[in-house]
Length: 199
Image (cartoon, rainbow, N blue to C red; front, side, top):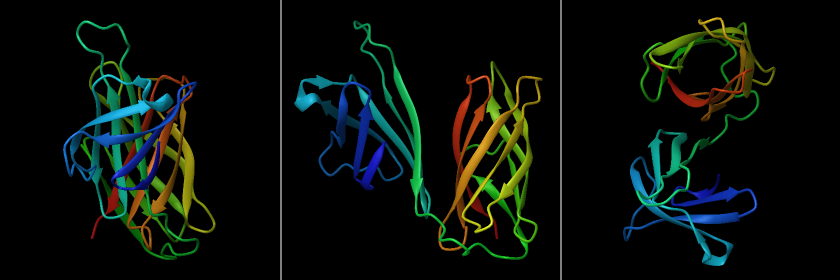
């Protein structure tokens, strides 16, 4: 997924190339809403079926998903991808002291994200939906980079499955928000999420 502006999103698919996502409604946009779109690649020869884009708008981050579901009488498989983009925190602009809690942008059940700016450590739990109810995975050894622009560490699932990784970036002038990617080593669960610093 690539963006030039909130209303100009591009999706690149293997072997098909890149195409623009265009809202079907006149004056439609991607600003924090569910939008029915057209998506043409290969010069209009190929069009995905019933594509929809949904985004959640924050102050410095936009997060959402793209889905193309097959028609009832067609055999194409559903294409689903999540994405997030925003305005990165400049190097060394994160507070050098103090700490803060961040709230998850969507459902915050099982979510806790605490950043200690002084020690450059992040602790908490991240929710996963794995074969049923939401499970909370423990953040482990998550460290903020020396310049304060990013963070990375380990993720310990509660069900005994292999551990995963988390990496992310702070967003906004001084880390008001963040984007993170979590991946379980099994490769079965990949999540993108974002959060906002609480007062």
